[in-house]
Length: 141
Image (tube, rainbow, N blue to C red; front, side, top):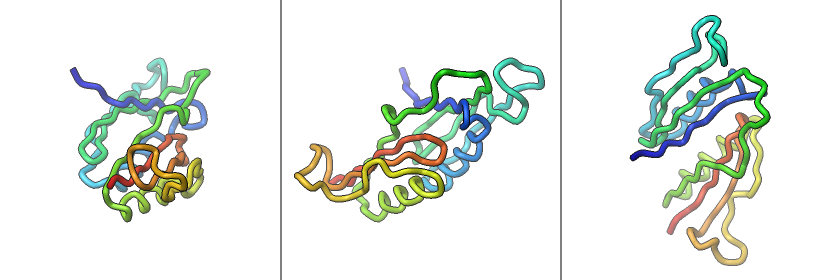
């Protein structure tokens, strides 16, 4: 058995998946776009410029992606996020800055814990990127 995170770009984010995965794979080492399949002309769910199904990796971890131009009642939510755990303060600071800028937003500033730790590290931050994906950052000891 294998589990994989699947990102579906809908609503305002529909049409931005390829841009997003190119951005993500440029930030993380050992990352690549493995495949992109677009919708066929006239195929339900999308148009030829949209991703029907794609696979990419971030630091060797596989993710899947799709876009749909249907009027969905849902989109991305901060309740589900990509959690980044690193022992390099410079690495998480750089990623946090890149992902939270240019239309992203900071939900928890990347900072040392004020009242001890959350039980899993010494520095923590949480942001949402310009595509609506949420990212948590943890500096492990």
